[in-house]
Image (cartoon, rainbow, N blue to C red; front, side, top):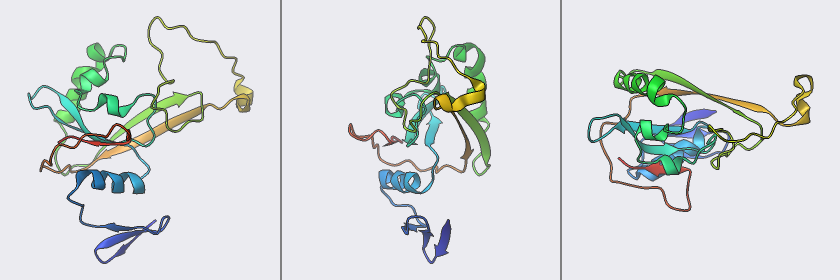
Length: 183
């Protein structure tokens, strides 16, 4: 899919030349990343107060049930506040997971979502059910799933060496919900 050409990579699918040296503008760097790799990237950094991790940057072209822009700048625990049992069962283990990541070490982390629609961009919700909400019962014939569109989305993230240098604060613009950076 990519060919090394001098100081750049050639994307064979788009014929775009990608610089091997990242641009100084962090939003441009995120645009290049999101335009050439079909994964979502959410960058968590230690919070300034040392208590947990904060969403400081993202490229989310395929959100599965929430608007990343609304979670921007929040701690991991606040992002997951609506998740039943997160505080009691997952909060400490998630913080430990991120505490143990070493610079230069590749870490794989898998996420998944089940949808009952065919929208790849689902920032408006529709994938979550909260306590007390009523559900419209659907008849699903497992032998004939072509009755409706049911999809499973699975993705695996590689957490590589993240830059130690911090750039200027850059926030997502009101009209752009796919990119954001605050470091």
